[in-house]
Length: 324
Figure 1 (cartoon, helix red, strand yellow):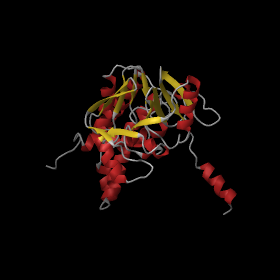
Figure 2 (cartoon, helix red, strand yellow; figure 1 turned 30 degrees about the vertical axis):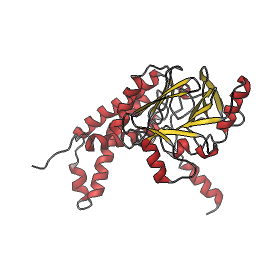
Figure 3 (tube, rainbow, N blue to C red; figure 1 turned 180 degrees about the vertical axis):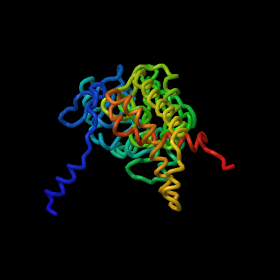
Figure 4 (cartoon, rainbow, N blue to C red; figure 1 turned 120 degrees about the vertical axis):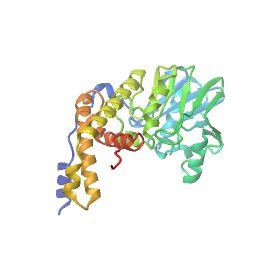
């Protein structure tokens, strides 16, 4: 088979998806492939269209929040751009981790070894376990809450338990009307696979309510091309609630008997057939409702529906029947 034939077959397998709503898109990137913008006063955010980081310029140097490798060296370029235009210090003195995942802090090692790294105590434990030179463990930790006072700026760190990851924390900027909550809400978009690859679905669902309990106007969500709003969090809550309700309906309506009768001793085939059928029944009305409202509703709703279903079955015990 020629290379051209293989390319043609691969192209033929590409799926067609609904158009991305304009409301989901962020500002255009510059020639170097990033956008940096002001959130409020001396708080800025930077994105390459898929990931986000943030930074504060202070009299004690720059405080950086996350360092996604997909933005990489453009993080410092963005800081330099702002510092040059405002006559401010461009040196990163502090780096705050939202959580330990490499896709959000895998460019941490680009910054000086004497940078003070701060994060949850579980973040440090997991980074020590992972032993990844690209992600130096945070030296400073907190357990539940910690308030940082750096260069006249106040930053509030909070951990409410496991959600997307065991260590994922909220970062509140009370003097900048901003909250940074990573890997929970994708502003204007649905979550990717399995509720943003979440380890604890109940904690993930509760995180949005925790966020709305804070006073803020701007959301730095860690993903995609624009800042979020409180309305984005509320819409995410509705989307997840609709999936939950649809799953509970499907679990009571889809009969598992035909799958087990058909596959006989192949129990896993029967389980797969049944769970796939429940997922399909539950996801279909949600996809129809949110296509054109949230980007990629037709792309990832099936996956998130499956993961929510498993949490409802296994964490909540819903539709778990005891043999008579």
